Image (cartoon, rainbow, N blue to C red; front, top):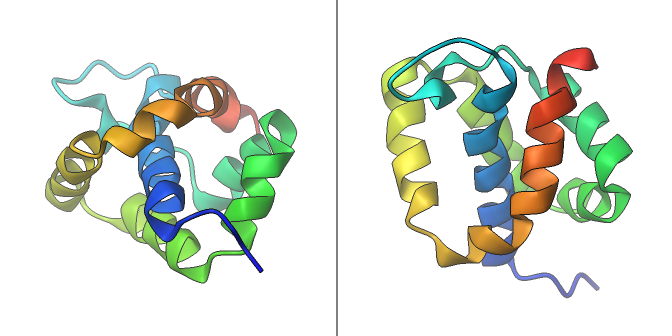
Length: 108
């Protein structure tokens, strides 16, 4: 049975989505909308940088779906999703993993 709460996992996935744009190198008022990483790149980078968090994400179809939706969304929708995620205090605990994935996802 999975003990990680869906809220915490959603915050992690959301935080990951928010951070992805840091790896793009594209200047933007809100770089989250400019990420070039796809779901496969994100997951490969997450598996390489934090296998435990990747395993938790792999056990949550809802979190996987949210990440896929974020990455497939047009810029206005990504901006809305990012604002919702930034409002979640639970995302703070995942910042180390998020920063690591954001720094390497374009390499996968």
